[in-house]
Length: 342
Image (cartoon, rainbow, N blue to C red; front, top):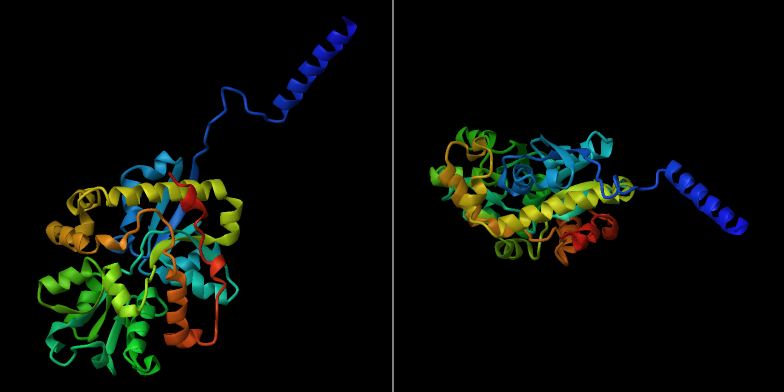
C-alpha cells in the first residue's frame, strides 16, 4: 500500500510539472494564434497580382488565422528591397528577383509560384505600327518598363536579345503601369513598352496600342522566350521561412485556395470579388482581359519544372549585369509548402 501511495504521489507531481511547463490542456489544445503579416505587392490592381487581393477578399487569409496587410507598390523591384530590409515579411513579385539576389549572396525564396507565365505584352504605339512590325524593329527605340531592374525590364531584354539586338544600346524609360504607361504612349515618351492587364486591353481597345509580343499564355511565352517562364509569386527571406514554417504553410494554404477558386469560376465571377476601382472604369473590359490570360495562373503554388533554369539562362544570355554569374536555384524557391497544402 505504501508503494502504491508513493506511485500515486509521483504521478500527481508529474502532472503538476507538465502544467507548469505549459503543456496543452483540453481547453487550449488546437488553438491557432492569429499572426499579423505585411506583404508588399508590385501593383495590386495589375491582374498578374490578382491572387493577393482575391485571397483577402474571399477571407482565405482569415481562415488560416492570418491578419494580412497588402501594401501596394508600383514594382516588384521595390518589394524585394523591402523584404530584404525586413520592413515586410513577404513580397509579391517576379521569380527573377530571388534568383538575381542569390547570385549576390542575398537569400530570399519563392514559397508560392502562382504566375506560371508573365501575363505581360510588348505593346507599341499604334501610330508607329507601320515601322515596328517585329522585335527586330525595336532597335534604337524608347522602350517603357515599370522600373529599371524590374521583371518587365528583364523580359524586354530577353525579347531584344533573342532578336539579336544589343540591349546595352537601347533606351529604357521607367513609366510604371496603368494611367502612367498610357500617358507615356499618348505623349510619345515611349515607342512601346512591356506592360500588364488591364493596361494592355485599355490601349488596344481604344486603338492606341498594338500587341507586338504576347506573353499572356504559357504557349505564347514558350514561343517568345524558348521555355516556361515563371513570373509572379510570393517570396520571403530564407531565414524567415525556416523560422516560421507554420506561418509560411498557412500563407501558402490561402494562396492555393485562391488559385483553385480562379480555376473553378468564370472571369466575371472572379472580377466581381475585386474592388471596383480595379476595373479602371470598365468592368467588361477587365473581365475580357482576365479571360484572355487566365491560363497564366497555376493551380497549386508549385514552381513549373524547368522554369527556374529558363529564367537563369535568359539572365545569363541577355542581361548585361548578370553575365558570368550563376545562382544556386535550390535556394531560390521551395515546393515544400505547396506539396503540403490542401
